Each structure stands twice: as C-alpha cells, then as structure tokens.
Image 1 (cartoon, rainbow, N blue to C red):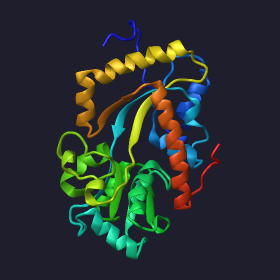
Image 2 (cartoon, one colour):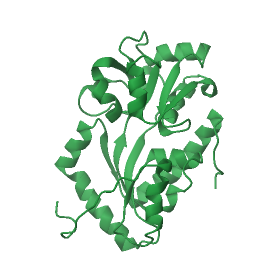
Image 3 (tube, one colour):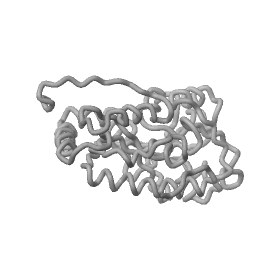
Length: 273
C-alpha cells in the first residue's frame, strides 16, 4: 500500500516460551520503532498465569486489528447438538467430558470454554481439560474421537468442516462470512457470556509518541482497506481496529478480568499489581 516510504518488512517467526522469545527481541531493541511484534489476548492469559515471564502491558500496543472468535466444537457423530446438552451433563459431572485446549490449562482457549460454562452453572474447577501443543493437534484428536469437544478459533476448525459440528461461538455476535456465520452464540442459547480474543501489534519500550502515531496511522489505513477486510472475513474473524489509547485500555481491563477468572478456576496466577 506504499505506507513505509519504500522500506522492506522482514517477517521473522519466533515461537516458543509462550511468546517470550518474540518480546525479548523487542527488549533488545528498546526505543527502536523499526521493530514490532504481534500480540494476542492469549499473551495476557499466559502472562497472568505466569507462563509468560513478561508483562505484555509494558509494550506500547500500537493497535488491535482482528477480533478472533472461539468456538466449541464436537465430532460430527457426537450426540451433543447444542451447548445446553453439554451444560446439562457437565452440571451433573463436570469431569465427564474430555475438553481439548491449546496449549495449556489457563490458556485463552481454556478460558473461552470455562467462562460460558461457569456462567451456565457448571463447576469449572472440576472440568477434564486435555492440553495439546496446538489447536491443530486438539482438532486432530477430536476428529479421531479421542476427546469429546474442543475449544478453538476459526482458522483451526475450518479445515475440518465436514467432520465436526460447531455448537457455539463465545462472542457477542456471530462470526462474519461463510458457514461459521451459521453458528449461534452462547447468548443466543441462553448463556450470557462472551470471551473475545484480539490480535494486535506492539512496539518496544522507549519509543516516542510520534513513532506510535506513525504506526497507528499506517495500520489504520491497512485495517480500512478492502483487501484486509476480505482477508479477515475469509479467516472467520472480524476486523476490529483500536488505536493506541483504546488498545491500552483493553489490555489493562483484560488483565484484571483474566486474573479473576484464573482465580475462579483455581489455577495459578501472578499478583494483581
């Protein structure tokens, strides 16, 4: 889009340590606005639970760009057809069903299934949570009928459309575009709970206000473009731009809410400071 004055972007994938390796790159480049990394609501969950040994709130969040929906899905042959079916059996025995999440208890996919179940009256401390290294692995286990249900985001479940049944999306609105738009929300099924994940971009500590404004303006133009909108809808997600101020408020609010939910689940959490 010609927004970088002829400069070239080099994308380097740095997985591992719950996102710490990527943040360490920013730490080594303090004040240098030529370095950026993506962040996700899962980074908040990992940091609040102690898995990520860094506080993502310390890095200026230039913007959030994508609202990511999390679904609860079962095998196509499952006898469970509505979330009320799950709630009814889990109220009687919270440990009865094997629930696949990635990548650990306390992760965003875990919280996205625990929050609505808790709202529906299930004792979520007693759930049988089966962690997988990735949502691709949990979905493979579901298709193979090794577990009963999975909590995962749209990109992970889309390749398995013919072999699964999506029971609900835990967001205020249905997903936009494609077959996922047919999946009802938890609220539509009588459970007033939402858990929405966001993807965004942050900068190293020590950058200037002007540098933040530069990237915020560039990413706003990208977010407004038809090509970006089409790409996000195709992925099963929703474009949701927030500038720096609103993104910072979101991270602070999400940190507080996540600590509270981890406490209710009886999972480890860091101090609330």
